[in-house]
Length: 168
Length: 289
Image 1 (cartoon, helix red, strand yellow):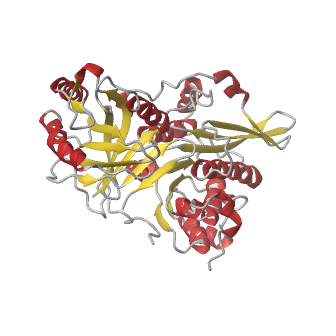
Image 2 (image 1 turned 180 degrees about the vertical axis):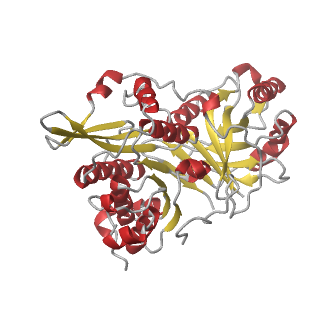
Image 3 (image 1 turned 90 degrees about the horizontal axis):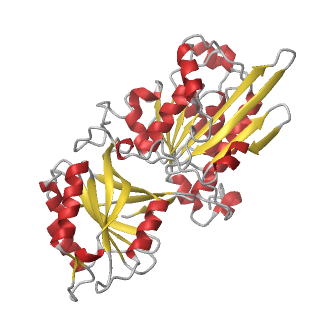
């Protein structure tokens, strides 16, 4: 199965700016893309970004062992939003470099823990986790009915010019 | 060494690959669409999705690029003419050709990177734009018209780029509720509109230029909105004055969450040969290579 993520460049630029802001104690910031899905005819799903919801300053937990630790309030708010708006939620954070990013071991471990929780409120929706670099993206999609996440194989940034990031 | 694209290498070191992997959808393969198909094949587009429900008629031969007298006699579908045109230039292109109205397989548009519309009616343009916006696909519209001024005629036309997140055709004033309503009231009474080959060629060429700038720009003046107006009497093309009055305007016609994605989406594990509207891919296609 193919997974594609599409986002308008202005939204993505805004997300990068937000994620680059300094936090009082967290080394990095995180947030969520609010998305709606559609089936692709050639086997797969396209996840379409509509908006972005940053994790609020007070909803981080001070934990120096990780770049950013979301507190329970952050996750609760994201779950509530997914429930009330019937949306896919894709967690996003940023690695401060150019080129194709990858999940760290901590990213992969923590994403696998909390992303499937969105199925408790929106079991019919795909959810996921992304990491953005200065000029690229990488991510995984948890698709309903599939036990293992699938790599998002293509990112399309809608703008002028268009940007295509194809993995694999 | 394959030298086919050496003369367009100024488009960038990755341009050949970007264009090759691009999936374009062309709706309407008549006067405008046939020019588009030809030019897009020449620049190296690798994947085509083409729609037209009509077959070639004698009255098409004044402008339908690639069509022959034999096609009139054989009532060849326009999708077949387009497929033949593409394959004659680029035999490796993947072509999904549907000799039907695009609305019958609207789900297939989701796979496109860019949609071109070469249709006659405002309502159809409105539908295509709405579908493209729903799936975050840039839409490039072309069209021409001939106006009877009494003692003479005027040829006009337009090329519009409707980008997700930017001004739409309603914002630009090209689509208006009164025009849509008037067209709906006159449904079936339109008759055949005058059409000639050279304005279609001009408009299609500008559309391809806008497309290439979008995909692999050769300069840094990246415009996000295009509305070109063609005056076929003065033989000029210029940016519409309407855009000057829209600086700072934000489109709110497609901004709601409900305007995005597949309504009533449900997870499915579609097979590679199935469309989400239940049709086998390529079942009614002339060519899928």
